[in-house]
Image 1 (cartoon, rainbow, N blue to C red):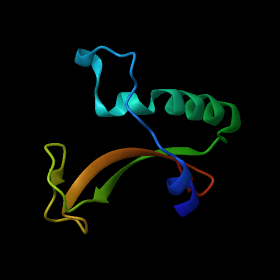
Image 2: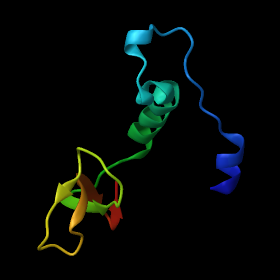
Image 3: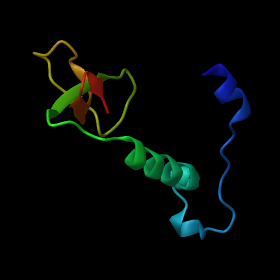
Amino acid sequence: FQQLKRYLHISEPQEMPVSQKTWWKKLEPLSSNIRTCAEECFLPSTNVLVDKMMIQSLGHSAHMIKMPNKLIGLGYKVLAVCDSGYTH
């Protein structure tokens, strides 16, 4: 991970209008490539599970959910696809 972080730099796209520049647009060429590779490589089995998960976070965001009765009381609620022991 440290080597990837050292050699991977994602900069702001220059050809976009200012009104369309958002933080995730910087990742667009890379995310499209990862998405197509993942679609080619991922072959789900017959037992696929969609489950809700909480990701703990101590930061401040409008998207965080507070659930005081859970083990992780504050964080992000996400949907995960689980297959053959792996969470995608």
